[in-house]
Picture 1: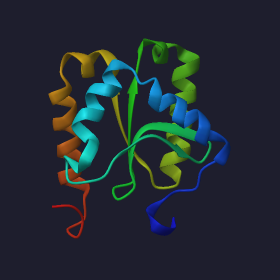
Picture 2: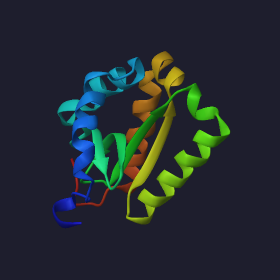
Picture 3: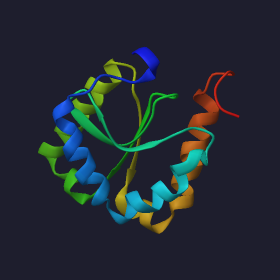
Length: 128
């Protein structure tokens, strides 16, 4: 992965733009906490990686953050989510997943989980 940017399907670019304009409330709340390197790393919204789009992605940490709603509780969707996550983990992407309703109720908890993950997983040369 040169420049820490994983390959992606260019056909997903337009869909990613549309998703950025139509974020869920949980995504908006978390984005307010991630944007502008507030956690010491640059995160991007609705980022295409391979044949998928993840809600948030940090190239430096190879970290994808997903916020999922109740539709993801359906067995077929849960299986597809796991397959997608496994494929991306196979190319070095790490995942954190949060429920939409939990982020809406307590975005600070989600931020704390992300900060803890960063402190445990960043290399000494990364971040502040």
